[in-house]
Image (cartoon, rainbow, N blue to C red; front, side):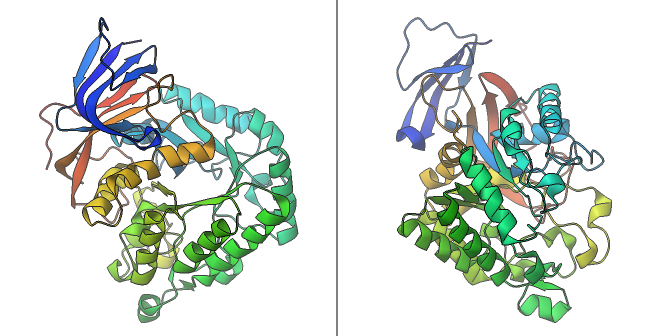
Length: 432
């Protein structure tokens, strides 16, 4: 394994409160020194990070890679390349694969696929209920032993609150994190847009924000009752941020994330009947977006995720309500985070912490920090480099993004995973 010296970069490591120009030294796949000159260090490779930022590799809390079961949409090979090009070194895989991650055999299959893709840091989330049907509990302990990092039911409903309570008690007894996306399935009523002006104007089936906030409130009550550790994923509305803030204020230790597109897009940005804007939870109001940003700045929301969901062309064809929800979003995570910084919604330290230190801490991973002895998961990026989202630059097999054709600022130049360079921006690459 190569000995690597990264020099002259601006090192930003929120976990260790580092922001300075200096060097990072890597040997045997681990970080051996930061900001300390190592005399006699014989590097096999030197990376000059002049005018670039060096930070921990990103940790993404919610992704779909479409394998096993839907390789026509994407594969581990294609999506891990996209992740590497985006500076992401750890991926949490939602359990709604085909077959569902509800047995140790499927969890082992995930690990095998990750190894074949040469991207071992894929962490499966175990199904909370068998086949995600919301009726019978999965064997959470055996799934944890098989390598699952948390439990969740993806976007599938739990049939009743007693089953959710029993599931949370089971998870708490084995110190398993519950990753819960709040949505009352019955209030949502198979909608595809926010219940508001745009849905009314175009006659789209709608989802009220109460579908999210009511489900979140119920889960908070059960978290207090059962002692289960809960992380709320992909929040979308003001009421949810308020409830999380109140829960933390009164000592309930819960955490939350927001998908990056919810911090930039609202229902008013939707191009009528363009399915690239069909996401769940739906794009909500400008007030909701601003409250999500405030929640992130005030650290009520501590993490940003990509909520990456690549689709083939057929999945996004047809009438808006009939198309499949989701955005292919790994490669826009960094530039959209930097856009938040440029708009003064958050600081650069907060933005980097939200995709490194904070998600790693929630998952209990030795990642998200440039700590001596930690695996050398490192991202080097040029915050000023502009590039256009097009077929020449895009790595993901899914091209379903509302940002297609837009020019973004912020590009990864090198990504290291456990001391191994898994991505390097080609010299002379077309940036436009």
